[in-house]
Amino acid sequence: MPEVVFLHPDLGIGGAERLVVDAAVALKRRGHTVTMVTSHHDPSHCFQETRDGTLDVVAAGDWLPRSIFGKCYALCAYIRMIYTALYLAWASGIEYDVVICDQISACIPFLRWFGRNAKILFYCHFPDQLLTKRLTWLKKIYRAPIDKLEEKTTGMADMVLVNSNFTANTFKETFPSLADVNPEVLYPSLDVSAFDGDVEPAGDLVPNGINTLFLSINRYERKKNLGLAIEALGELKKLVTAEEWKQTHLIMAGGYDDRVTENKEHYMELRHLTDNLKLNDQVSFLRSFSDAQKLTLLDSCTCLLYTPSNEHFGIVPIESMYMKRPVIAVNSGGPLETVKDGATGFLRASTAEDFAEAMTKFVKDGGLSKKMGQGGHRRVISKFSFEAFGSKLDSIVNNFAK
Image 1 (cartoon, rainbow, N blue to C red):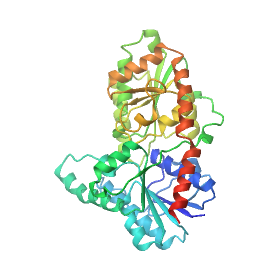
Image 2 (image 1 turned 90 degrees about the vertical axis):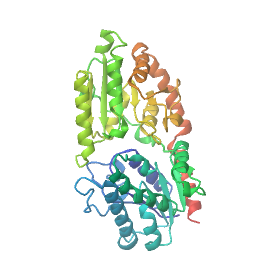
Image 3 (image 1 turned 180 degrees about the horizontal axis):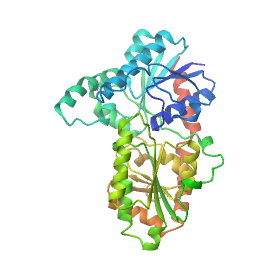
Image 4 (image 1 turned 180 degrees about the vertical axis):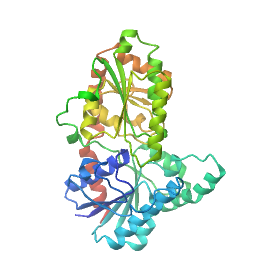
């Protein structure tokens, strides 16, 4: 049975982290020896499986800087990942036949040059160079070699997996020199066992007297377009009665890390937006919630609002649909493959008016959430089950290691 190492830059809380943790758990359940190696792991800010002994986690290189005077985050992330790869190859003592790395491909040549004769699989959540803006000539100069390095090193993997057909097409468009590389789609899945347990009472998480509860779950990052949910709520006020409005609420729940400047800045930006729109009584904010709290929020809500545009996949809509809660999402990227418009939720343009129009349906029709939620649950079971995900990944790894 091939021994597998997962190499991941920062094992915190996010969609990419959820995927690699699920992948590691799936392979371990099928008999593989699995180790996760990362540059950062904080037991107080991570998924439960990485701190309760389910998975073996080794951290190396956290002493290296994350930025240089608040700049050069990408460069520092590459250096940290390369260091972690060298640690794995030279100093860890870990036995492995397959390395599965993701997010940062710069580590691949070092694994190939200095590591043992192991197969290297790269999981591309989305091309890194598309996740940043180049607003100044200095930023363009800084990013040019990093972007070229990403393309070159991604092509050095023995195999590339992607999380959706949308990402597969984007991969082809972004990396023209890798025309001979055909990424295989491995949809992220949901480990439903984590969602089938008892749900804790809402307590103070959810305000009393609410008939329609909208929920947003995403990291406090600007690219997630979280302001859309707040602005849509402001538009919704114009479309419902005063009594309906009093019984409507939005919870903004998101991954938050005090070490990340953008998290702190964007959280305050959203608070200011809420204040400017005079929605303070209708919006609550929650930072860095637990897995148990997330289950409670999903169980308590009427509908999930998923606001990113061109999101490469998005695991939160899958979680919501499994919990029998419909989703309103932007009609681009991964949600086009996960949310069935009109059946498990609504796909809408990225405008406050379009989102508000869909939100109104749940305010006006008390039975719509249950009806669509049941359809969403069936869709997740049939298309995005943990069993299907694990079986496909296990097959890939076993064939890969031959």
